[in-house]
Image (cartoon, one colour):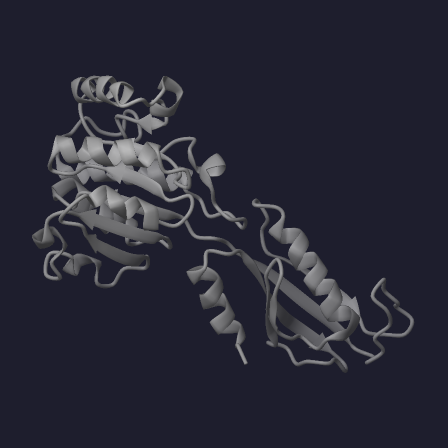
Length: 281
């Protein structure tokens, strides 16, 4: 039998939203003690807070919360008395139960292509946040364990992808709605990843580091490859918060880029997708 904490882990791994339902308080007699939990998803439930009308009410409300990406935790109190009928029937244990509902959002997913000085600094900042962090590089030494040691205590779920040939192939395996940052050591590699990302329909926003001259050349090449202007316009460059810093120091650039990304990539309780994620980095 799947426990509630296993269910939470499964929802995160499969990028599904859910609601954690907890019996927060009990007065008198009730089907379950304070602390009992269950997890509710759109089509599944795990665990129980006692069954009957109380649980039916909790499941119904949890699924209403799943439909609203901006919800916050909430609670309700139910009287388990035959004098307090509900639409789900009567539950006459005689007590009173307070139920807490906590949305479990789909965490943001970010992919950093290029773990050079700037990419590593961005990864160090993002690793301190609750998200799925994908690090992609064509050079094995950039992903070596000793180099990534600063990420050892990461809050994020860190995934490394060494792609010595065609790193753009990593795009297909990224979770839906993943925000992509492109800052490799090679302009040709950058262009190939940008081109492939624009042709991959399940991704979120796409950001490219570099000068205006670099982007002007890229636009010409992307247009020559058959990509229309409105598709190319999805790429945001330069990346970062305007005016945060004019420094070229990798750590300073990383602060600006990570701040912009984290501002836009707030968790939602619905499945993330391009329509919600392509607004800005």
